[in-house]
Amino acid sequence: MTPEELDAYLARVGYQGERAPRVAVLNALMEAHVRAIPFENLDVLLEREISLAPDAVLDKLVRRRRGGYCFEHNGLFARVLGALDFRVRLLAARARVGRERRETPPRTHLCLEVQAEGRPWLVDVGLGGLSLTEAIPFERDTVHATPHEPRRLLWEGERWLHQAWLGDHWADVCELTGETMPPIDQEIASWYASTHPESAFRREPMVARALPDGGRLTLRGDVLTLRRGEHVARTQVGSADALLAVLDEHFGLRLSPGTVLRGCRVPRVAGRPEGLG
Image (cartoon, rainbow, N blue to C red; front, top):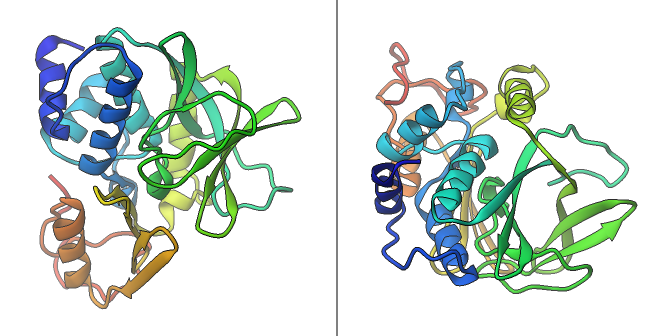
């Protein structure tokens, strides 16, 4: 990543702090990232190819002010951290959100291990409505406060299990063994996530952003959810026009009038779909 590209990224997320490879800097960057750049799968629903090429990801998430999913978010964030002299490993993981423990989900999630101040930290800015807003150390069975939900890592059967406290219970977020995920594995996993008929990303809109007050805003299908601690408020989006307005107003994603998203349950707007810029 060039100095000019780094400056463009920092401007995109609104970060103006120091650039030393310290934990405080890492945490400030994480929170700025998940507040500014939404998690979203709209290109998948628009039948567009997802490119993981560094220039393509930078153009999409920074220059065109779009969002993306884990490979785009964590891939970009890893390059940003590398430019700031952090040591980063890209790790393969299995997303477990909403899954029973007996299930074995595909290993199609990317997260990061970042070395800072003499120890490894888990970083994940690409996990939708549960993206980390602060790094957590690789420690067993220790609860860590974050600007949003408390988190912990359990060690079970040769794997780390990442969990979030959701008001009244611990929920599985993802599992990882510490194995790295090289670029070719990222490409294959991304291809599966974006093209396989059974992929959740092909079923409905999935958009999320962290809020500065500790809340989270998510759109899943036609339901907009605002979560602040134990308080959860849900609103059903009643029309395609309303959906476009929600994406613009709450997530900064501006679609062309008449856009039709695959799997969207709201009434469609007449006209030829044009898609995102």
